[in-house]
Length: 315
Image (tube, rainbow, N blue to C red; front, side):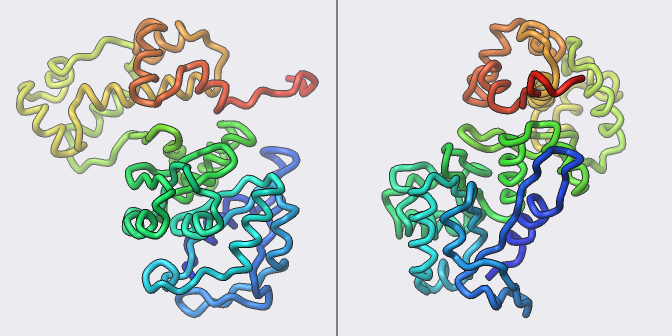
């Protein structure tokens, strides 16, 4: 089986991080054969528990399946399918990473649901399980008690999203920093793809983007950005798109949405104040952009991604 997705789950949930949240997760590795599961590149993975342990779990994470199960039609082990069904029936939250979605689909846990998997295998999942609404365009799908991710790096996005839901945005961001990762991209019920400050080899654009990122609450125009870059507006727009992959105005909007989301996650500012500080203007304008681009209201976003401290937690 692939190593990468297993390693992601172990790295995010395994190390004890009680300095960030108490209690932290208790990670248990389960396998049909606890004595050893062969993985790619010759590694042998040992587990401390059998699949019967899934029945008592709060969250079950299914990493990527062996390639033969999605490429060559090798059957998914029946004991895994049954264990997933039992865990789901017992109320566990079920999470799949990459092609782990094939196991969830085989267990009937994705019937009638929208789900993500690696884009290379989305067609195969749709063909095998037409009752599943496979979405190959998103990083991951959060359907409440069942969550599925696209391939590779998107698995890390989903694991950080789980931490974010459980323990709050600040804890999730701290975990990302410790992993030397940027704050995670969000891609659940809508495709929340965070476009951060991109790397660029264009020396004239790098400092400009850094400056613009500090002035998002101010009115910025393409003409003004072009002047600061020492170019005509037409040349600037062409160079910007070639380096960044989008238009200057779309990039500004993305950055303002990112700032608005962070303010909602980490401050008590009102919706009007968030709109003002992010450069998105009035509360009505903020709501409109959130509805169009994120599929939620600012209040709904704050409710989902901000973890309130208990009343007796102190300052």
